[in-house]
Image 1: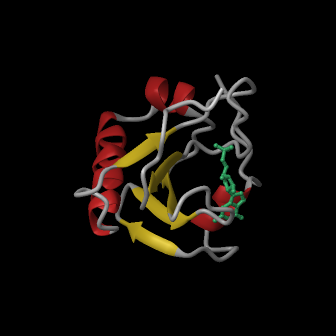
Image 2: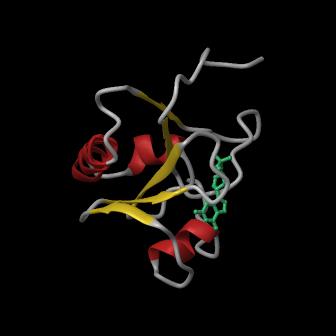
Length: 120
Ligand code: 5GP
């Protein structure tokens, strides 16, 4: 069982202890603009639950949260006007992927041609 550290920065955002530029929120997820954007639109979507990464989220989260989370991802991209031009989603899991924040999150990138999937 993965141990969730509730002092991580996204847990603080979820609790409203530190501010964020919110893009979308519902019962299952919050989406907010990345503090260091890598594209004209760069938004992070996080589930409202104590999950470290995709590993424990996919294994342990209740089905309604998994469904609600991915519906929130689509709703966020739609609300941001990204459906027509397209967008990319990405999730870093663990050390090899350079996951920095230990609360499961999905990046949404858009607003320009995003180029090849991996740079190297
Ligand atoms: P990871 O590497 O874990 O997949 O991505 C973490 C992301 O969180 C990075 O893109 C980073 O810029 C973003 N980030 C880190 N701290 C904060 C913060 O306090 N507020 C916001 N909005 N984004 C943050």
